[in-house]
Length: 126
Image (cartoon, rainbow, N blue to C red; front, top):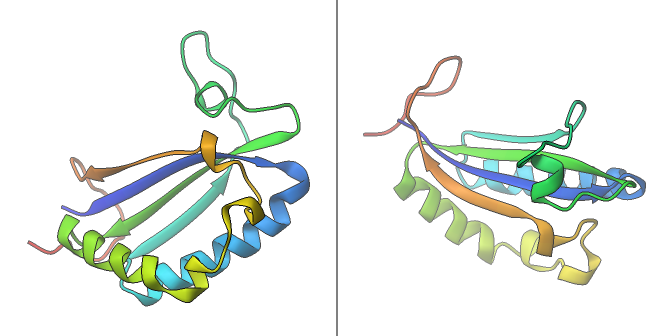
């Protein structure tokens, strides 16, 4: 089974183009270092819930949109190896937190082991 890092974050609508440029560059770096897939998706049908929801989780403001992202790796070991390389890559490390086009304090993320996998993706390593 594959390993996936998932992220949810708020992005101001006015900074969506800047975020897209940052995400494009980040995706190129992750893929160059061995990630199998890199996805960045902007919320299109994301409603507040009664108990929990994407907007509630990131304390979404009226002028913001939720972004849902994930990176697919062959395994947890590959994810750890790739992320170590990415974190040393100057294309990633040169961005200062205050220059980011989103509020990183309201972003959340986690790593997930595959449970059910369907669709086109390269085979996972064993």
